[in-house]
Image (cartoon, rainbow, N blue to C red; front, side, top):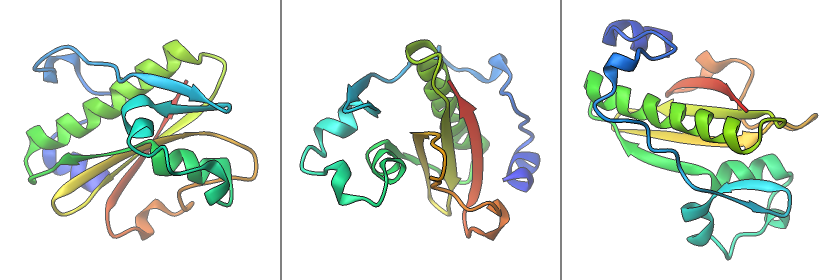
Length: 141
């Protein structure tokens, strides 16, 4: 991810001047001690936490959004701003809980997901450079 950011002339945290419009914070819903994106949860009600080996896997599955990435700086900024909106929303909603926001940028899309950090559970590998996509992990909450 660092090379993609460098090539695009973007540094983190994002400069507010990159904002074309104010951040729109997503709507969350608490379900069985999980914080979920309301819209994604409503579309996945058939999926249960018991379908996964741990709660982190469940949350990462439900809490993911695919955004357009067309190799432009603007589309990368849009993906990063969505991740920033998640950070902001989670910090407001659950200030005592710790979350990871994961941004994975592939050839033609960007997946942004999040989960609560739990001892003994992880969604991403320790070596982020091992992924075929560019991956960024942000702290939230």
